[in-house]
Image (cartoon, rainbow, N blue to C red):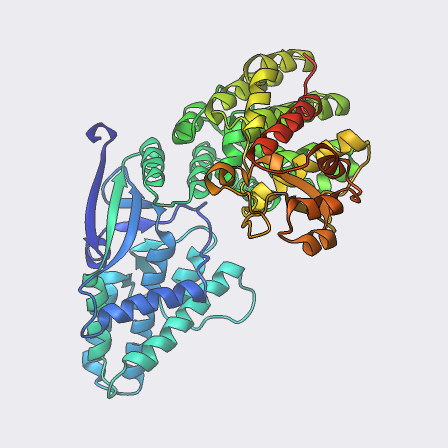
Length: 571
């Protein structure tokens, strides 16, 4: 990895801040966001380490930096931690300042305060009182940090941004902790010892990279190893740095930053990195997660391209969020309710591979064609993913091919149907075979929901009636119970046990009737089945005199024939 030009080293807080280097939070990094929960976790860790019998050191995680001159470093990941640690040191300086004002060992405490400030915070110009800080925060937070926190000035009560209020609250919180837990017999010695201790015993794994591309690569490598960094911030920093390099006016920057916040709001709980990959793959050759940021950096190289990307992200964030949420307001203006039905099915199947193609198609297909495409995706997903359990990576390649064809305005619905059915639509024999052997452990909530969906779909196909599959009135009945008792004397665990969670052993039953029959024998169950409102349940009492593995296979084979007619694309 030496050709990537980055260095890795374990460093203490003293080695980071006590070395004359400068650390800069890029102006477009997110604002300070830690709250009391994170402050308390950090304080508990520090105090456990600080106590006499505590751990000799405390690991603070990865600290990812970027630099071109080995003196000034942009913080790619770690700004919340380094900012909070600086605030802890400033709160200790505030306590020393209080002791000086009270006339307590004033000369010694002034010396202690100056030495600690010079070592870990930076120095104050003696005339202007302007700070020359080791840490510079982002464009929204740095003025507050330098104006009020670094010089220990009184913090205003009004007119503060949310993140500035958090910075102020953080300072007050740690100041109170320091004042009440560390001041001993009105001496500043313990305060100085505390700062020196955390400086020497808190340590990071510091990764320093030379340019944006390396920062992306390091980020992806760490993520692959389970170290969660903020990919959203990383991309944002890169795009905004591209924009800023070409002399963008401050009002343009403010507008783009606002646009970015809008994108995050639109996505809500949806993952930004996941959205980004599906968006990118909606009009580019398939890019895997590990290579996504490299692909973006190689493609987006100037101000216009960065602005265009941000505008497109804002536009497609709506579509992406709606495709993941059938209840989204986005669908209220859609006259075809079938779209909601198919999106709900894709969500239930937990299948996301079609998203890139659907994002590309929404703008280019009319409403009817888009609804038909959703239906294709639902049927293919049921056959390929839910029943077949086939390779989703192979499937994603086909959806990407279709997405690029749609984005290039080179494909009609008929063309896309041909692409999909040719590669990822399991043929009838394969589907029937997989369905006949399908098992769903209904103790799992997702499996339970899918089993209900299958049973209600077959019931509707047979009875031509519509039911609310979500209704609590209905339950899944295990014909052969989960735990057969003495009512099932012919039950052979070795022969019949493996078939309890087969689809053929499931049917639908009114919740009350299901509770009443419990683990009754098959004859008593059939007496309840024949009065059921469900055709598929009545049919059991008509077709079977006994119930075992052989009968379960027989019924599931019949169900598979119905499934062929229900989940079918006419090719």
